[in-house]
Length: 198
Image 1 (cartoon, rainbow, N blue to C red):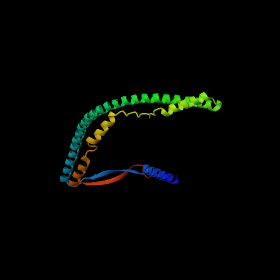
Image 2: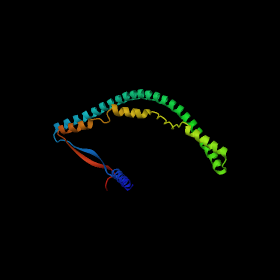
Image 3: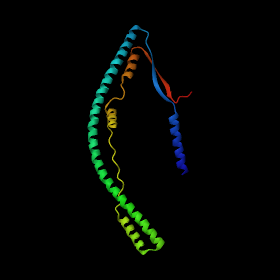
Image 4: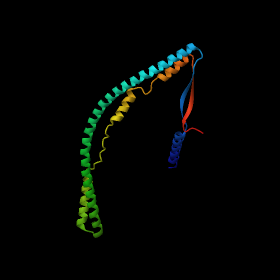
């Protein structure tokens, strides 16, 4: 028991430590080259970046439309399956409620007649108590059925977008390479954005 408590404390401590640890992101400083020719190349890098972002955004939007179509197809299949499962669940749940009602009724009768049997030594009450106890033991036990989960179109759309489409465009990385190739200097810096030390 003490070992389990110690493990729990360690996990809790690790969780708190990670939750409070600083979070960083990488930012870049761009130092342009001195020569006029290199600066012209840098302008071309900026133009390529703009075109890359535009093209990437168009591709993402096209991909999102395809993902939406695929998601709707999948949702239609899943909702049809869900409705079939829900129908079976409703039938099983109705049987379960009938079972619980009968079980509770027998338990009440057993309790009632057993008390009379014990208190008054009534033979007839004792026999009834045993009779209902026997019926309870013979009663087919039913577990409460698990209700099926209704599919979420929004969740399916998000999954399709994640699996089919780019989450980020590669344009910034390409721009940095272009900037350096043109004679510029790129300096990466890690800055704290959350839970920073004062």
